[in-house]
Amino acid sequence: MLQGFGKYLAEEAKSLELRMFEIGIIPGLLQTPEYATALTTAAVNRGSITEDQAAERLRVLAERQKLLARQPAPQLYAILDESCIRRTVGGRKIMAAQLDRLVEIAALPHMTLQIAPFSMGEARSLNLPVYLPVLPDRSVAAYSEAAQQGWFERDPAEVQPLLTAYHHLQVEALPQAPSVALIGKVREEIQ
Image (cartoon, rainbow, N blue to C red):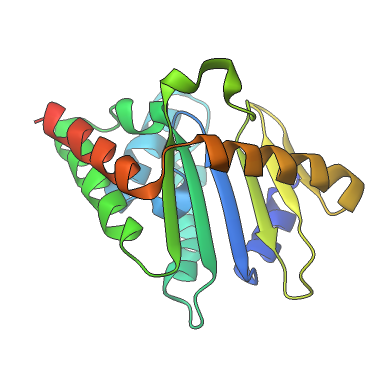
């Protein structure tokens, strides 16, 4: 587990709202079990993690995904870089099911799903994945990670620039209906 991720998980579990931006892969909270398994199996095959670590990742992910069904459900805002939906993970069948799942999730009343299209170019305000949970006291925390390092922050002076960048991204990304249409278009292309 990357540094800071354990602290983030504790805050994610009690969040009232969660803003997330991801590059290259579908965010864990929105992954199907098959998609998540394909990612962890690839990591095992590369020697990046052990089979036990893969099993633990999948167990933690299944626990995290209970957040989607929690009552009251937190308001979720997800912005996915277009690479998330274009990068085939697990083969065509698994990826098609994952894209179908995204469309289902987008229909939830507490979910807003947007795609940051490639056409945004340099206007994309974030270059690393960022997760911003709003906590019960209405404070905002931040979690981000690079390949080998995770970073969790509660200091408002450190969190605010990330929140501002997220809001810029939210304005520039495709609205939800065109985002869902793009997901549908990509889904048709992989058949």
